[in-house]
Image 1 (cartoon, rainbow, N blue to C red):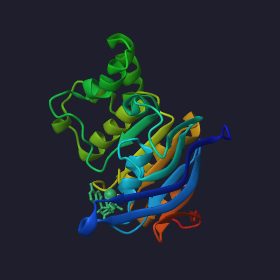
Image 2: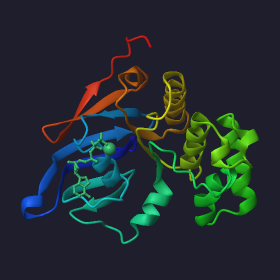
Image 3: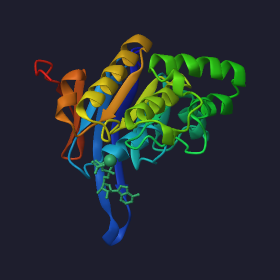
Image 4: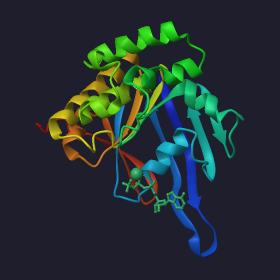
Length: 237
Ligand SMILES: Nc1ncnc2c1ncn2[C@@H]1O[C@H](COP(=O)(O)OP(=O)(O)OP(=O)(O)O)[C@@H](O)[C@H]1O
Ligand SMILES: [Mg+2]
């Protein structure tokens, strides 16, 4: 695979259930996302956006097809490793609509949880976490609990957490849904900055058209397939 490609999906199918409960969601999706790209994933509710992110994130089993993450082929009709958890931990950072910070851990404990699970020392992971929190302008909140932060601060902490294990890929499912337009623009600009500076591929599900000019490209799901469109960067926010 091209060394610039972070995600490659080929002829991916996904259905759920059997008999009366059978539903086909994705039928033969093929697309790539390059390193350094911030791509918006836009499609109507129920079209399969979350399902697609969860398959790329090795959380949801595809029905058939192939998935490459970086230079590793991870799925080809079946998972090619028993350790999908390792792939998730090593390569992927997830950001969700609700921030999902663990409420009984303070901010720095939330951010250092995965690196420490991966074997990074407490001292080293805290040093790196503080740098990330500084980058997101919430360094002073390191020892605060999530309930003591605003929505935007919590979402920035959640992005810091997603970055803490230095992922090659960030999968963000409506990360700005709970934020006002100004905060949303800040978060998306930050994701673009991370993509560019750290050569990370970001797929961001959004229903907010105002965010699209900030993205490099738009992916949509049409006829159960993934279609790539240019984002309109000429629109002024
Ligand atoms: N575990 C499951 N079992 C059965 N059907 C499912 C399951 N997960 C998702 N679906 C179905 O798959 C389709 C796609 O769901 P998905 O959550 O991916 O949509 P979405 O595009 O993320 O929608 P939204 O914008 O509302 O979040 C829906 O019809 C949903 O009901
Ligand atoms: Mg969804």
